[in-house]
Amino acid sequence: MPHSAVWYPYCQMQNLTEPPEVISGKGAWIHLKDGSRLLDATSAWWCLIHGYRHPDLDAALHRQIDQLSHVMLGGLTHQPALQLAEKLVGITPAPLTRVFFSDSGSVGVEVAIKMAVQYQKQQGQAERTHILAVKQAYHGDTSGCMAVCDPEEGMHQLFKGWLMEHPFTAAPRAGFDALPDDPLLQQDLQILQQSFEQHHQQLAAFIVEPLLQAAGGFNMYSPLWLQEVRRLCDHYGILLILDEVATGFGRTGKLFACEHAAICPDILVLSKGLTGGYLGLAATLATEKVFEGFYGGPAQAFMHGPTFMGNPLACSVALASIEVFERDHYLQRIAMMQQQLQQALDDFQAPGVVATRTLGATGVIEVDHADRLKGMNQWARAQGVWLRPFGRYAYTMPCYVISDEELLTITRTMKKFFTIQ
Ligand SMILES: *Cc1c(COP(=O)(O)O)cnc(C)c1O
Image (tube, rainbow, N blue to C red; front, side, top):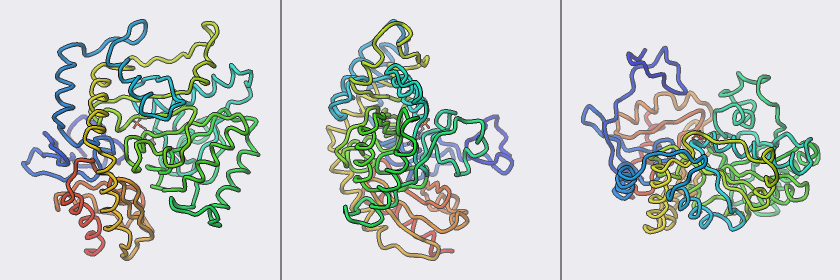
């Protein structure tokens, strides 16, 4: 049992010893109090895309803190929020024109769901109160988000019956490279069409993580499936919410994962990489069509407004993050990381390993049983690498400033664990 008063996430506190204390970091490295360093394979839950202590992001925050740390966005505005909203509209697919700020990925998703349901109501479609979600999805830990996360997976099952009950469709099984006539893809599409047919009358929106279902099991699927989702949403008058909290800002090899399928959602949620992982911030973007659905009297207004929405520090560091991303040609770097990950993981075989997958700056080793990965975190730590597998997945989603040698150290460490068993 830890001695501190901190209640740590996703773990049994009874068996936990106090985790190692971090005092600093630089690039892909975490610096610990005992003087040792750890190479971070996770970019701090996938958000620290520029690594630790990036000079340009640090400088942006120093500048902003001398100007304005916070002010409410209710009845007032400020340049960092105005500029970031304009920038996000500029870099996301063209139909997205409006930006609603909040403070975390979960809240960004809550905002998207509320927006979709209220939109439908104001279109005279009050019976459209449900969301069609996808199995193996992860959309966050708050109640509205939990209700659209995989319904069987252990994390939120405890709350079944208390949460809003939404319909689910099967997770797509055809991989990223599936050809149009792939029988698995054909089956996936058929199941999808049936789900829409069965539930469309009650649906306000469809929600999915595009191309990469991340925390729900690193399922990398075909852009053709996502194109069919877009077509079906249009056909039945259902809004499409894309949760790019994990996939946004280059993680799948494009700036936004929906670009792989050349489609645009009605509502897009961004968070994790948005501030380069420096501060909590989310952006829920909407098309002009959705935005205009809130025109009318006070009762038609969107009633949401987190205290810290559009925080100036967070917006400033987000602007700096996007600037560095563009200036330093991160998409080229990510393409090289993808090649390196493929080379390292594609043909990897070991007892218990059932699959390996790579997409953009994401590499995954899937095993047959979670027990196989027991002790991996601790063992890797002794090798100087911070790996944090969960469930049946050992993965890396590193920062984009990582060197080839550092990335090689990560994939070597991931693989070596299976040879010492
Ligand atoms: C992490 C994540 C969330 C939740 O974001 P928080 O900032 O942790 O609330 C939502 N959706 C996806 C796809 C995520 O990966």
